[in-house]
Every structure is written in C-alpha cells, then in structure tokens.
Image (cartoon, rainbow, N blue to C red; front, side, top):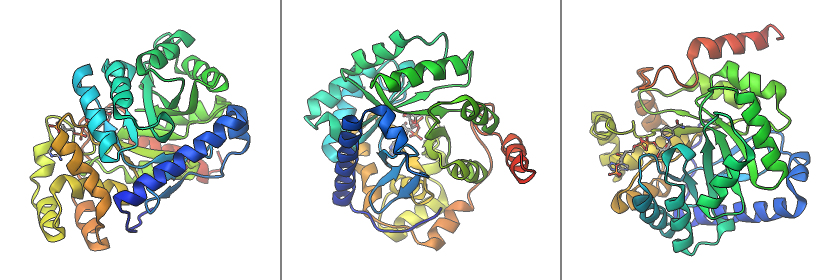
Length: 329
Ligand SMILES: NC(=O)c1ccc[n+]([C@@H]2O[C@H](COP(=O)([O-])OP(=O)(O)OC[C@H]3O[C@@H](n4cnc5c(N)ncnc54)[C@H](OP(=O)(O)O)[C@@H]3O)[C@@H](O)[C@H]2O)c1
C-alpha cells in the first residue's frame, strides 16, 4: 500500500476538481446508477491526491478535522482551510459545529461541488429527520460521505435509514467509524449499499497495519482520526526525537512529517486545528516526500497503544475475521 510519489498543492487542487467532475457525473446518473457503475476496489492515488471509493466517487486524501471546534472557530477554520486549498472537511452531529462548518463553506466562496463534506450520525434511534437536520445545519443539499459514528444501539436500522438517504439523493456515500472488523462484516452482510470507508484512531503509536490489510481486502478506504495523537497528546508526537530528526533532514515541520507518513501509508488524513497558522502549515504535507528509509524509521515508532482501546478495530477480532477467510468462511 506504501507509495512515495510526489504531489504538489497545485496537483492536489486539480485532483479535487476531478472529484467535483466525478460528483457532477454521479448527480446526473442518480445514486442508484452510481452504485451500478461501481469501481471494483478503492484506489488510493497520492499523485492525484484522491482515493477512488468503492462506489466510484473520488475523495481527497487530505482534509480538516473539526472535533472540539465551537461553531465560531469551526467557521473561521473551514474558511482558512478552503482558501488554503483544502477540499475535504470532516464534522459530525456530535461535534455540535455543523452550522459553523456550513457557514465556513459559504464564506469561502469555493463552489460546493468542489468540496467533499463528511458528517457523522449518532446511531441512537436514527430517523430521516436526523439526516435532514444535518443538511439544514450544513446549508447543503447533500453530504458527500455520511458515517455512522459508533457501533451503538440498533446500528443496522440506522444503516437502513442512511441507505434511504442515498436513494433520495441526500447523501452520496456511506461509511463507518469506530467499528470492529466483525461489526463491519455484520454491516456488509446486510447492506444494500456497502460501506466505502472506515474512520479509526490511527497515529504513530497505533499504526493499524493489520486493520489496513483487512480493509484493503474489501476495498474499504481507511481514514485516520487523531492523526497527530489528538488533544492533549500531540506534544508527545510533535516533539518525538525521530519525527524531529526526519523533519530537520527534509526541511519540513514535525506536523508535516507525521501527516505525510499517514498519506504515504495510504490513509486519508484529517488533522484537526482551530489555528490558521497550523491549518496552512499542515497542507504543506502535500509538497514533499518521505523516503522509504524515513517511512521505516517512523513505522518503528509503533507501540500498539491506542488512547481509546475499546473503540474501533481490535487486533484479535480482526485476526479472527481474516482467519475465517482462509478457512473459506
Ligand atoms: N470518528 C471519531 O470518533 C473521531 C474521534 C476523534 C477525531 N475525529 C476526527 O479526526 C479529526 C482529527 O483528530 P483530532 O482533532 O482529535 O486530533 P489531531 O488531529 O491528532 O490533533 C489535533 C490537535 O493538534 C493540534 N495541531 C494541529 N496541527 C498542528 C500543528 N501544525 N502544530 C501543532 N499543533 C497542531 C491542534 O491544535 P490547534 O487547534 O492549536 O492547531 C489540536 O490540539 C478530528 O478533528 C475529527 O474530525 C474523529
């Protein structure tokens, strides 16, 4: 999965324009047709700056996370990000900031079709009005990718409602967050519209290589949450001796090195920030490459140490699912 091609910011924005062209075509065909035309597998292409999802849509591989940002900061951060060249924004119903995200999109003047908007649904008693509320707060007619935030309550029923939203043109693609491999299998077994992406805790101390293998088998894209370790752990990562040494050798910053490591590992990366300088700094991760030797040094920082061990892919469970495949299950 590891690749080390060059991508410049200009190419990234060009890739994002290709995303919007793909989405425009999808809109003409309607959601059913998009799935009928489905590509055979997710294809991560760092040179274009996009991953082609299972349903044929292209998604930018780099974006802005908005967890903990209040509406006012979410608005200014989304504005800063979009004017700096970001084209992917991640929010959630549970963050309480979709109104700010929507306002930031409007203020940026970037056409809606050039932006890939992800939101997440809390799975308790999901009804269509919950999805309509996301659209209302985000001031948009559609969400590009809607994730089920946690594997709680009746998540199968929630998935069914999300599928209806795709059929009604309110949502373009569906994904999961914090599900185990067994739970992903459960959704896949009943889904009319399969999940195209899993968002999970992934950082230098919890690298998720087995999980990545599992997801690749199904062509499901992988997105790292807390890619810099998350608040309040980021100093541990940004001041790490190896990260700082690689940063100095490449003439980049520690944050750019870590983000680049995620990208060259084949993951979609959405560092969170409410600081305009950090937002502009982080997109610089698109402007350089790490060597294979750099990647190996960063891979060696693995500790298999998640901050939220009870959430998302669990190694024993993932292994059991994958062993089932070799036994023909
Ligand atoms: N699905 C889930 O359950 C889940 C859970 C957690 C997160 N997420 C998503 O993933 C996104 C990223 O995760 P996260 O926000 O928790 O953690 P993160 O991206 O690992 O770290 C965010 C922290 O890094 C700091 N930071 C960002 N860029 C920096 C830079 N260049 N230099 C120094 N510090 C920098 C930010 O501070 P400043 O604001 O000062 O820049 C903030 O404190 C979230 O925003 C959210 O969209 C999803």
